[in-house]
Image 1 (tube, helix red, strand yellow):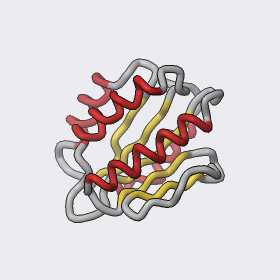
Image 2 (image 1 turned 30 degrees about the vertical axis):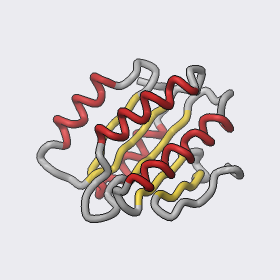
Image 3 (image 1 turned 60 degrees about the vertical axis):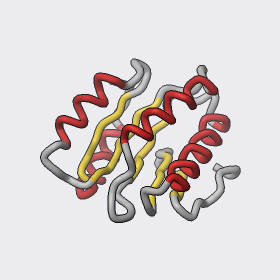
Amino acid sequence: MSGVPEGTHCSYTHLENGIHQFIFRDSSREALDEFFHQLEQVFAETAGAKLNRYVVDITGGDREVSIVSMTTRFRRLETQFPNRPPGRTALLIKSGSLLSVIDGIIRALAPRRDETRFFGVDKRDEAIQWLLREGNK
């Protein structure tokens, strides 16, 4: 993606395999602002895509980015881009006992056209394999 700037709090890379990669360097409000600004540009530049794939590493900094804040902001962004392509997102988090609980809750709350899964940061390769599977759901 040519028009997406490199952030100081959240970096963006369009990988060769087509996955949009976001890496949070910290969990600040500025990081969330950069992420959503970059995501807005991705939505605008991929309006005709069949499916967008994302890997989002939220483990930067001393604590993870708030999932609640991300979900709330994403809902607002959806109203600006009602015809955006469906998305498949792998969120990389610090492994913990609540991973499966969080994964189940987000799957239940996610819009029908999107698919989101949580993976421990040490399972990045597994997350990439899941993202590259054909189809959505």
